[in-house]
Length: 82
Image (cartoon, rainbow, N blue to C red):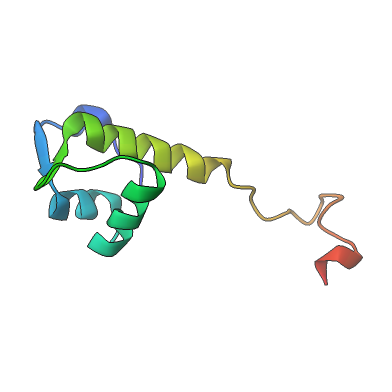
């Protein structure tokens, strides 16, 4: 999920197509993300508040994902990694 500076979001309403472009996803993926993070768009798109909320939830959830272990990590080596 790309970083979005909320100060640059100047419109009050964003179409679903524009939201897809901002998030870098397809419409199908956006629909799945909306269901997963419980943010329902309006009939034609998102208010700026809902768009920010959805982005915030997705962006921070992805940051919480554990990264791959580095070579120097004690967890990076062992029989469980085979």
